[in-house]
Length: 309
Image 1 (cartoon, rainbow, N blue to C red):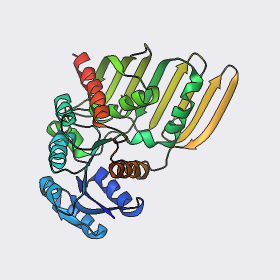
Image 2: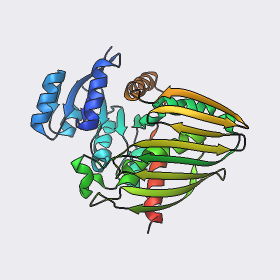
Image 3: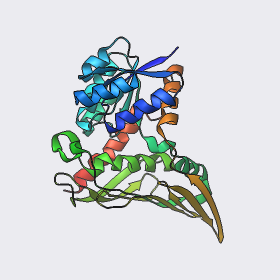
């Protein structure tokens, strides 16, 4: 049996889902997409052999749609996810889970299977880092940083659609990573934000968090530079770990020993994530990244904004 999927929001991110569903994920087939730009949407639909809808609610209601991927701006996530869950259809929801913490709490209270697309959990070098984590002993400090070019997406410069800036749109990647890598929860956050090139929302932030075991985590997103970098560092009592999760490679230091591995980080993460989503729904087990995971990340987002005054 082929699992039929509809994609609400077939822009930059949604088009990637469409490509991988068509070519890289067995037992799953895209049947319909929704895009506000009708001409671009029709061209994409014609090339891909799927139907086009210009309204997300109409797509969700289609009888030939078994499950829904939501890849729209975050201001609309709660609405479309709620509609799909009410229709009894599993949902894969692009990060951030919602535009606000209140909306995230409302989604958690709804029945149905919802997964948040925290794709970095399928990054090969980060998965290897998680396997090596116990080599570090008790970890007291973690540093996560993403440095990226300014956004090319117009909606990320529209306050009504983007809702937040780099804390919400990019910070959610590294907030989730901190929880996933350490297995701990954040209990305190302090953050500062700044607009550098984005005229309406922050494109630079620094944050410091404390975990429930006393460890500190440093977060940074710089989304204003003509360069790219994604770094993870962890310092434990037994060793240190340094990871480049943009291009790949990691270094584990223990005493005077250095262990290096060249693990490629440039492998697409969507296909394995989509396969695990498919398998979890088919088996009736919790999603690999649950609504509670999404809520915990949104709690960190909210705490960052609240602490900045």
